[in-house]
Image: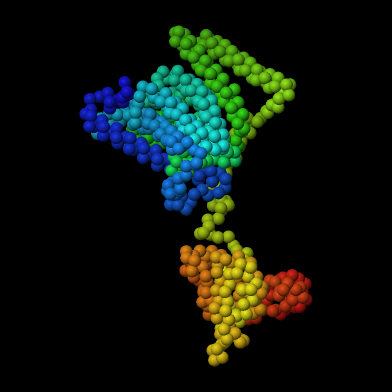
Length: 407
Length: 212
């Protein structure tokens, strides 16, 4: 079914009402996302300024809040250049491959609702029960993965169609980096999905509403979250993995030749992605809009409060990393993705699968569970050791052959 | 343990937040609300000085115009009206214009002037919006009756910037000769009278010459 699991579509509400509520959700989600990107960029600049002993934006509007708006207006009035050697059509449509997925990912994230211990996450507006998210298809999280894959196209096409060296190099690096970390992302995701058993984001958030011990973070062990976090940072081209667009490396990377609105779209897409992927992480691992709901006030508003608070903390952690970490070298980045994160995520998935099968077969804890745990952890450690050893042996062999090997 | 050092880095940046929110710890100056103190002898916008009795010091000799490397001064002298002389002497600066779009504030004109008529204030924050406003005429350059420079509408004067306009001249001696250091060479200036020379090339000379 295309309509998904939203009770608005499954119920017997009139077509006009459904249409109005959906349109209202679309408008609010779009506006909310744009405003939150604006505020996020302001907050990021203030926060980084504070970490660097300086004031961030402070002149445009009170405390500099309108700085991003001023930047946007300035970009709007700049000259729109298309280089001579550029592929005109692809150059024009590449920014949209970046921004449209960024906008669409937000549509499957549960933003608010009654996710307390007894609630079912719905909200009643104008007499109709509905979810506080734009859409809740059965494929939920898979949609998020699909959109982040399309975002790679935006960067790749932008760099290639610019017709000059640095953007091409930047986009090639970017596509390699994003594709390799997507594998780690997917594997970390599999760990969560195994435990929740469903792809729908609403159901994932709902299954975590029993308190902190029900959060995805705890029921999958902490490792998938760490892998997902690092992989997301690399997916978003966020520092420290921002080799793609680092000014010290490649001028501007894939967006060197872009100006005016096209650049503004890339710029916005990047920070929008940070917010939406933080929202996805909160949904998968931290219980979405769940938390302690006091008894006064509408419950769905408390859900919104918890959701916004958690996303804010995550977005701030991204900013914190931006201000703290130096950039790894490109091959170090690739090593991290392929040789550390993917084996780790895969190993953890195997471990969780083993424990799940063990439970499914009716065994209920006690000595045999500990035995299974010990055996699987030992096997995984041996395999990890084997992998590390093979990497070191490979390095030594290449050194012996005279090839220069970096650490 | 290198793994722990990784997280210590985060503690460093997090610790900076506390540092930065305490007032006075942020190293940024909120320009233009607060400005840093300007050095005493900063080269800024020029003024045409007058004597204590109100007569202008400029005699229209055009030395400043000829020494200016940027060709930004336009001077034309005219004979003094004998009944109402503008300057002591035979001639005065009839037309005097400085084009601040060309001026590089080298103050060679200040060094060249034989009557110390042209000196400079510490103001460099003047931003005009029209090319014609950039050409400062004699009326705009001459000091007013209290000896202070005129505050034009587009200039951002702060307290202290319109005082001691002759500070730079006062610290150097004519043509840099060491034997002139410490000797009062300065004519009385409107609003200030005669002032002591500043410590220049040789402090010993000032001390040995005593009070001047």
